[in-house]
Image (cartoon, rainbow, N blue to C red; front, top):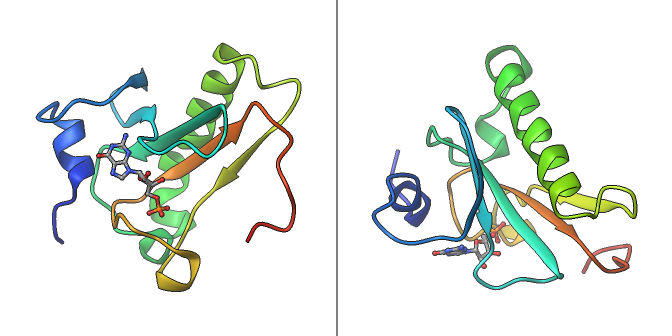
Length: 115
Ligand code: 5GP
């Protein structure tokens, strides 16, 4: 399983604007934000994409990613207005970094369907 830039962010080898951290999860602001709030929420273990997930093995970890999203959304005052959580999986979805990450987007009206 190859390393990505997110492994270096987890190890604090390169800087990131970290907004949340616990033993299993790290969250930091996206370097190229697509909304006033755009945070990437990642597991500290290197799972490439949603394709490698299953509920039996990763259910608890996924719950921790959702808990982090709710906590950050409250902290950033977008919980009431609403927000979007996105996993891009694979080439057709435009996944660029093969370390599982959930995008938390909010702070403006988000269009649907996405492009
Ligand atoms: P994907 O297209 O794989 O779902 O999203 C990857 C996201 O990671 C993109 O939104 C991109 O802007 C963000 N990103 C890529 N490299 C870095 C980085 O070094 N630091 C931060 N904070 N975000 C990054």
